[in-house]
Image (cartoon, rainbow, N blue to C red; front, side, top):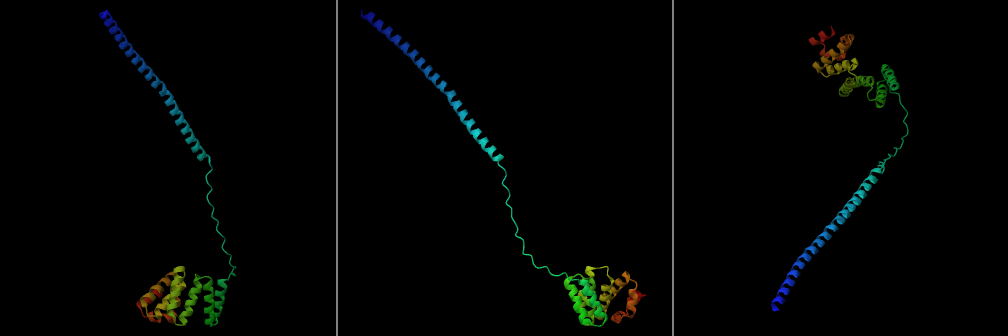
Length: 216
């Protein structure tokens, strides 16, 4: 009996052992199956979140693009105070009156009127030239030279400033400069030779051989 009882107990233990193994396998399979069954839900949730974030981002970008550009700030310049208009003076009128006074020997009045003309038009070449002639009468050769050189710069084709500057340099004893300007004046107008033949202002250069060559 004891032998049979031991055999039965042994058989029962073996069944219990095999049954436990199968139960462990089944329980593990169920656990794994449960784990795998939850993973698709997580992936779907993540995908939905990503889609929502992307949609919100692109919606924000579209709203930025659709907004009209900010209008540039306009800067308004305040108009300057309008000053009272000065009467338009006629420089030529002063110049013409100055010539009349010069011919009458009223050099002071002529000088004043030439100066008025130059105040209106500083580039008035004829006024610069005639004012230089008055400076020569006053022995103010520096001012005369300055006016004549300015007249030449402004109007290089005018012969009178070249001739008068030749006279200024001759009076100052600068022979080479005088002859250079006299030669230039003659090349521009051949009638200058007649002026030079009798002009006392050129006495200091009259003996120079170049002078004879220029006026012949």
